[in-house]
Amino acid sequence: MDIALLILGFLFILAGIMGSLVPILPGPPLSWVGLLLLFLTKAVPDDWWFLGIMGAIALLVFALDYIIPALGTKKFGGTKAGMMGTTLGLIIGILAPIPFGIIIGPFVGAFLGELSNKADNKTALKAAFGSFLGFITGAFMKFVVAMVFLGFFVKTTWDYSEGLFSFIN
Image (cartoon, rainbow, N blue to C red; front, side, top):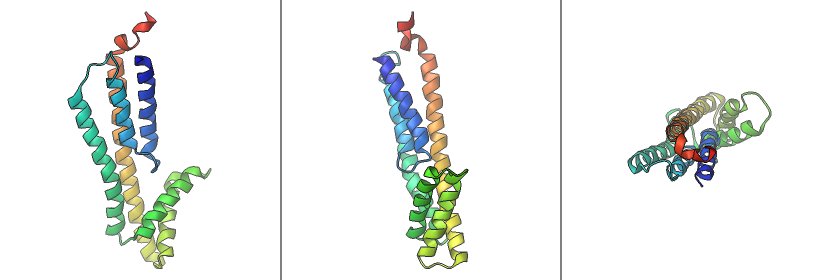
């Protein structure tokens, strides 16, 4: 059972890393579930303080991911149309087979979103930059947290590998 929890936990960690770039997936909370599954194994002792602190961090980053892009858009004079354009541009950028689509897509989407909201080119460009900057900041923050969770997962797995992989002996 421990191996199943370990594998499932690792898959959640990977999904969390993917979720740091894909807006549909809640990256850090998924990575936290991966840590939780690891700590539910018999080989790894319970550490509810650690899991509680990591869970609070995951939820904080998850919440900030919605706040930071809105602040970036607002600071640079953007609208909801620009924010929606950023999200649509990201999705298209991920699906499009072009290099750097994940970076170009949100910026172009924000720009077109602002233009559709009757903004002039200069205002739309400024708002698109703010929306894009907010998106990149949120994605970077989620990615860093997901990678730290991966580090904890690997280190804990290594520390308790004798118990986790005892079936090999």
